[in-house]
Length: 124
Image 1 (tube, rainbow, N blue to C red):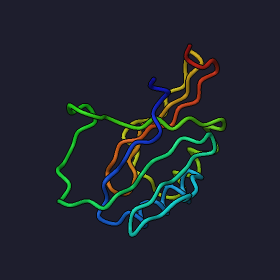
Image 2 (cartoon, rainbow, N blue to C red):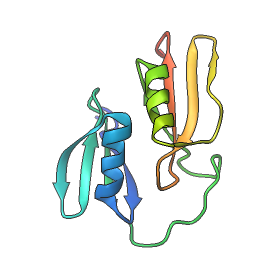
Image 3 (cartoon, rainbow, N blue to C red):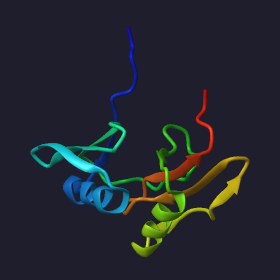
Image 4 (cartoon, rainbow, N blue to C red):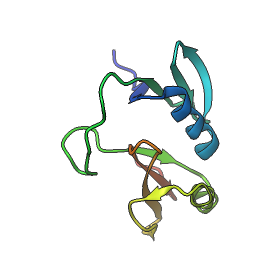
């Protein structure tokens, strides 16, 4: 029986450096390392594995086929957005605030697409 998604992975030329950005910018914590690879965990228990890339990154657009982005759920949108701005994060869009949802798209230092999202009412 499938019970859920344990983690997703990001390949990086510098996994520990990228993991540290997630720690500083988004409050994840490094909970397991092996060699240069590591798992980072969010407060709700969701995880990202950051592994060593074996090739150069090809440029990617937000809606190219395949995995598009990771949505990062937050309880204090304005606070996390301000922290990301202070870290000179590259934002792909302006924040949207409407219909009980706040969101904004941005990239991590290696160009992976992410977005912050805060919902007044969780999805069913």
